[in-house]
Image (cartoon, rainbow, N blue to C red; front, side, top):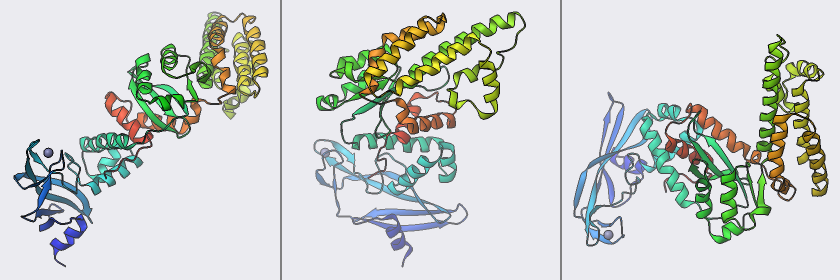
Length: 408
Ligand SMILES: [Zn+2]
């Protein structure tokens, strides 16, 4: 077999394309192949697909292909141009690469596989490509995957916010809680951020929404009310967010009490911050005794913590009537506890209780997309936060969008 025939086969070129020449450069560890086409071939305009004769050629271009063993392999060709009556002189599309890509489709496929398994800098080393080239692969893959995605009804939606980096811009994410995929990303956490998602849905898709889990965040509430039919029965304020609010209040009680104790030289609460924020079962084994001892001291924060932990029962009920009864008991307890920060937090919860207890109809929480959350966390920590918000969005869709990313 001739080397040209071998490479024609390896590159997967078909008529009218052939490999005219192959060059092995041992010193540079490179294989270069040149593709040529039959002279009488006709070509389709890349805009309207009209078949036309050759007009001329563009400058020679180079595409990186899969390595030949240890040799980096490049394909060279001059792309034919046609003169279309409607679109003017345009380049035709070549079968081995996407327009504007400097990689062949097969190389791009490999790059997508590698990028989906490791971080960007790891992928650049394995693939021997640059940082910008790696991002280029992802930036082409995501719109391709999103364009291919078929419209479907997302029955249970989780709305969440993510900080791109510490103290930086927020993103609003809309997720399919059943599939564990990111369906929508928008900057900021305003009503518009979420409205953009709903606005892109058909009426049938909006009607098909059964539940939306979210934080008690007014802009998200407004956006959902404005677009989702019968939103009042579908919004479910997320358990972890509610426990987060109460947890913050417990922390405020601790801070106040700690300050008061320290004023008289009492260090009882020093270093205890996280113990009060854990749920009981998550207190680390080696600190359990210390925590139990602290709780026996009848501290204000101990009582606030007990109030917080008791609220977890709210999500254990099955029957709404029992849940409501429990809620009323809990709320009475809080309002008589004289712990101002906790009372205030409970007041916020009370104002939203109708759409917390919708949980009994729709047992959804954003924790359902935990796999997705940890993925996003990993993306963020690998990049040490994102200053470039577009890259962060691209990475989230790339890893969490459930998309078919390959070139066709
Ligand atoms: Zn045309």
